[in-house]
Image 1 (cartoon, chains in turn orange, blue):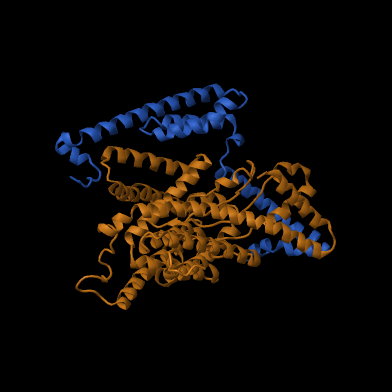
Image 2 (spheres, chains in turn brown, cyan):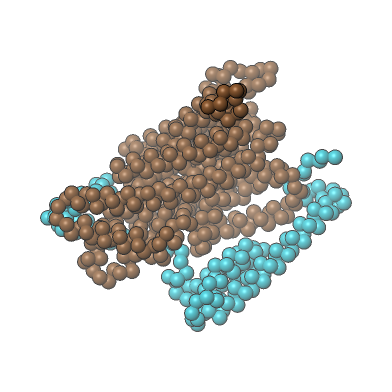
Length: 417
Length: 148
């Protein structure tokens, strides 16, 4: 895609709209601009989500033997088992797993409130220390635990020296990416790597029933935290909006990473502020608190203001080329979309149709959220629509729908349609 | 809380010409200043681009990555070599470019040397693991399942 033509078209459209006296062409002009802009930003959201989701689904298919044959992925005795001599009833198991999922979400909520308090009282040092600690733990301890699973599955005999060397290197790169300068590609790779570590770790500690109970509760928590006026995420977002100064630097250090979509780099030249930025999640030490997921709309505003500034002061030329496209998606969203897909891999016994259908449901959820975002213009939770659609479709397809699909694809009798 | 709302809803001012010029200018100034400051901040932190930095800063970054690689960190050398390759060889010369060029070349050589060391060690370990006695078992990360 060319970088200049849509931009010049957009600026000409916007300048047209600012000059025409009547309001109706302005409305249609802005809506034209909006649709082009929003479809592009939707695609920019879809690419990294798809990438992460495919990698995690691939790793889940790789680890599927470990899931069925060994006890790595058991529920650690937290809930009553559904098999064996002391098998509990399904309702008892689901209630227990929902309780445990509630406890996990309580911890996430606590971490979010803690972070809101940090941001509110301008306690930058606490945030830096917290984030530093989290990054070190994730990239060393959880990394080793993930590596042990993968190496056990591929059955190779790698020695401790190589592992420690590798973990040491990756940890140094992660710290450099987050707290100092590193190439943008490395930042994206480190972000995806962190996501994968989190995903596999959450799958390890919450494998069977607990993960399924966690997902709808997380969707509900997301709705409550972002849409209610006293929700911690809403407060966090407003704090970041108000103290506009702090947003970029703090986002790098507190949430860790601005995820920059690789496909957006050809669009934006070097003056672009934040082409596609994704707030990463605030990482609780052992449980990823997905906390900040919001898709907000910043940029039609900044586009129009930029055009006014261009008309006003011609020396702002270098900033004219900036395509500010701030549609942000929190890292926790990546993690929980991928957990949904990995759980479908495990529970549906690597049924490829189920995986594809759930992936399409996720994309549809992102699309619907983007559409609602265009209408509403406020921070929205990105999880609930995708998760609800995905969960309903999965449970329907896994128990009922697959019979229909199998009947369609298996050879039938003498009746040929 | 009102400030974010007006920032988001500024487009509605465009509908009437009178309001657009009066209302949005004030907000424009504020947003512009905020935007400017935020761009300054974010240029520093978010979009790392080597072209925007002064040559001294580039040399500084290159040197830091080069020196850091000596602490058993070949990944830093790899990143240094790839990131500054364009700066060292493909850009018009500037006074620090010669030094960056030496750093890049040495980083590349260091990466290859470490790659060799790691490969040789791994091959040796995989071949001699069972013949090393108890040390082989202690060094193994995950003892593989046997099939025989």
